[in-house]
Length: 335
Image (cartoon, rainbow, N blue to C red; front, top):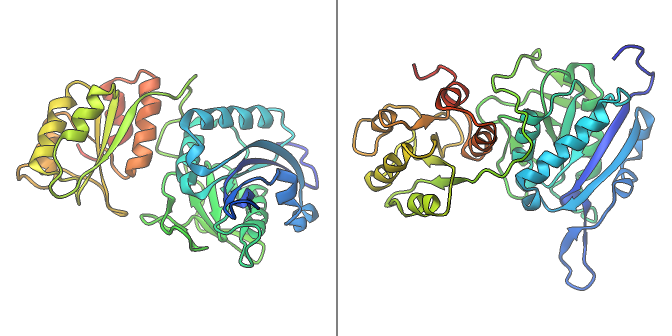
């Protein structure tokens, strides 16, 4: 943006999550209650370096941020950013599903300003609360010039991660997020934003869709698993399947038979349940991924199962053909 202001303007979108939770006086259990202004009041230092516009999108727990709700969130962010008055966007979110929402926003948003997601692992009433520090850190990243061109970012515990690679690796620890395959993009060190490498073009395409309701199920392989879940998904109207295979994408013979039977009817994408590495047609035994490769199953390269599912949903909504699915998921890495 030309003629930049001395003080950047940050759009802070509050969707709920633990960062907004307080204890219910009757049950003693946490639920999202705090408004955006109440959360910002816990981090007054932000006012020293940025002007903040508050948008109370909702008070949703992470598991209630359904794909179509994230599509509405993307539209809300886009509309606010198009006016040219916003220099960065931060989004508070429940940590349970932050990696999924970050990935969806990364594919849906086509704006120039940085978008940084954050949450908290501890309640506002907890002596070890991390919410105020995380929102301050995220605002610093969102207003940093080197944050542009990196897609949607996740900033938790002063570590900056790319939406495509970030994973929640711990249910409760303050240091709950990591990018197992690539490592973080950068850090916030005593208020200084440091990126480890220049920005580069994302390998996955942007998506323009009107709705996001395509039925795609995610099935995890395990020893002794059969084809019941595959058959049940197809009977229930699944438009696509993502299978998290063992190791390099290997399945039991029974599950493999069910997958092969439906691969000609709906798109089936294979990934690995491992935190690092990718599915690959390596083993030739019955159920091995090498056999699946010959039957029409699409390999997911480095996308984890939960993100591969969202990508397949978006592509189905776009009416993508098989060649497009192969181009997006396999990226020429299996030729």
